[in-house]
Amino acid sequence: MKGYNLRLFWILLLLGIAIPNAAYAQGSMAAAQPHLDKAKVAAWRPADGLNDLTHLYEVVCAPALSPKGPGEPPDQAPPPLSERKVPARADWYQEPAKVFDNLYWLGSWGTASRVPPNPGGDSTWAVTTSEGIILIDSGYDYSAPVLIGEGLKKLGLDPAQIKYVVLSHAHGDRYFGSRYIQDTYRAHIIMSEKDWDVLAKSDEPNEIKPKKDMIATDGMKLTLGDTTLTLYLTPGHTPGTISTLVPLKDGNQRHVGAVWGGINPSLIRYRVKYFANWEETFKTWSASTVRFQEIAAKAGADTYLTIHPFYDNALEKIHLLKYRKPGDPHPFVSKDNLNRFLTIIKECTDAQLARITAQPQSTKLNQ
Image (cartoon, one colour):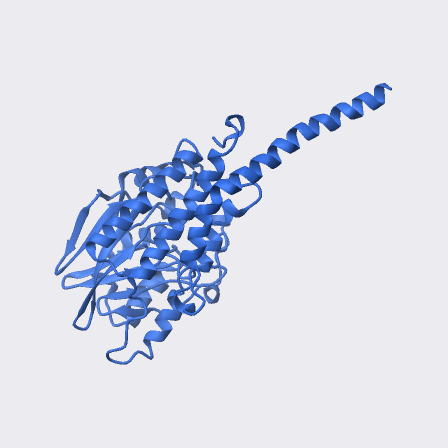
């Protein structure tokens, strides 16, 4: 009889845990569903594969779509530089390309373009001006001499003319190459104060961290010769993520490019905690998206400039430029594409927020 009672006790205990958890999962998914639906509608363009953003939707909304809901991957300490495995050039090399009259892409592609591997590749944008070059991001330390140094020369440009490097955020795929550029070409490195602080605290190898230099402020105008970039602080991917507006030239046409400085909201990375909890993280990233979308619209931005080419078919668009005839539309120019991209980021973030705020108070994520 005692054995029966003990088994009954454990069955009831497990049911007491499982039933509320199942109810939470169902309820939190219901709360998230309107946001997921909006993101999916914004992503899906079956008649226009070039501007289909379902890859972005599937990645950014994945935490909200999962049965367990949002959860930060384990934060692992990076290996010492001497133990790091550098991928072979063939695994990340991509030809540089001219995208606008004053804008060039110097990025990577392939499953080993990041450590750990990332299928999306990484973008570095080079803005040419009458007095030199401004880079947005720098890629990795092992790829920067090739993709940036050799890449600019292949395009007929002089890497010694690099004057500034704007780092979108303090993650390795953005800044690892900047120390090489800083030391080799004496370029100024620009990052937000909060992300300089993240950089100082992170466990990444000090040998490839850039020396602290210029501090970006919200709405900062970065002028070099005849060109002015405008930098905005859009926290949420990191505490001081930077998103940038870039004036673009295409023959007699003028456009405004927008570099959105991150993809997913992030709570902790490289042993540095960015925000108090997930709720603050999601609210911050969502608010930044709304604000930058309004800023971009007011500035007349009509071109999304990716930090990862996988998400918006950037390499396919670059390929099409080889066949573009005078008078043809530019494959990168699309206000609709820019707005949809930011809408997906916002709605997927709001879906994650809806899921965690539907949790019982005792189980909310506060790690």
